[in-house]
Every structure is written in structure tokens, then in C-alpha cells.
Length: 154
Ligand SMILES: Cc1cc2nc3c(=O)[nH]c(=O)nc-3n(C[C@H](O)[C@H](O)[C@H](O)COP(=O)(O)O)c2cc1C
Image: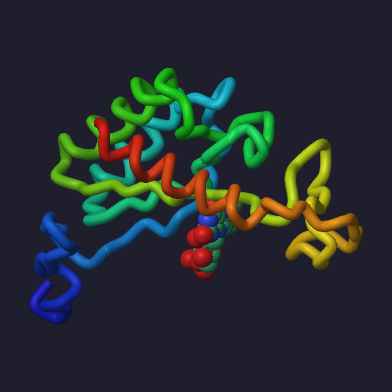
């Protein structure tokens, strides 16, 4: 371990300390069900924590109805999402690992079987064009501030 003194030493991240510099990058696990995190997902992240990961970033957490991709993705915009997310957090905290969530907003597109635009500008993943949604930027800002505000509530 002395070969990698920084990799295995703690680092401060805002108000918290991460036990080492090993980070699990965000990736959608597709282990959700009905928009909620499942026990299987908690077990999946627990294994990473058990292996010594200092920080886990939970990928692609859907932040509202328009962003939700039905299937095995996890949402964060409803109170009923909290127990599943808490189970994930508890499962990694028992090993001294920290976890943060990556909020996902699909911006100028939404998922309706495939990615479709809601803007006249070409979105990232689609080649279709459509009339601009006048209040879109405002709405995205509002969604972000609502979700981050509600996260603080817990
Ligand atoms: C299945 C899969 C899902 C991913 N989901 C996300 C995601 O939700 N958010 C994100 O920022 N990156 C996502 N990524 C990108 C990874 O975080 C990472 O940047 C990428 O896999 C490159 O790292 P690697 O070479 O170690 O795989 C995903 C990658 C994979 C393979």
C-alpha cells in the first residue's frame, strides 16, 4: 500500500471525508423497479463498498416525470423513492463508504419509447427537430431547484 500513499489516504469532500480515493463512477444499474431502488441494487452497491471503494456515485437518477425512462431506472422525485434509496445508502455506509447520486434531466428531449426532442434545437441523442418549448429552460431550472431543495429536506 505504501506504493500508493495518496490512493489509500482519506480526502475531504465538502463536509464529509472519503476514506480513500477509489471512486465507483456513475452508471445506471437497471436494478430499479417501478422507479424505486430494489434490494438487489442495495446488495450490488454493498459488494462494491465491501471491496473497499471510498465513494460510489449512483448514476442516472431520474428527477421528474418527463425524464423518467420506464423500466429499471430509479427516480428521486417522489417520497416513495426514499426507502429504496435509504436502503442503498445504509448498505454502503456499513462499510464506511460514502455514496452520492447523479441527478439526470433529459433536457431538450424526453423518452417515449425512444428519445424525442422537445426543442427546435437538435438534441444530443436524436436527429429529429420540433418547435421550441418556450418555457423549457425555465422548467429545467425549476425542476433542478425543486429536487435539490427536497433532497435537503431529508
Ligand atoms: C452500463 C453503463 C452505464 C453508464 N451510466 C452512466 C450514467 O448513468 N452516468 C454517467 O455519467 N456515466 C455513465 N456511464 C459512464 C461511466 O461512468 C464511465 O464514465 C465509463 O464507463 C468509462 O469508464 P470505464 O472505462 O472505467 O468503463 C455508464 C457506463 C456504462 C458502461
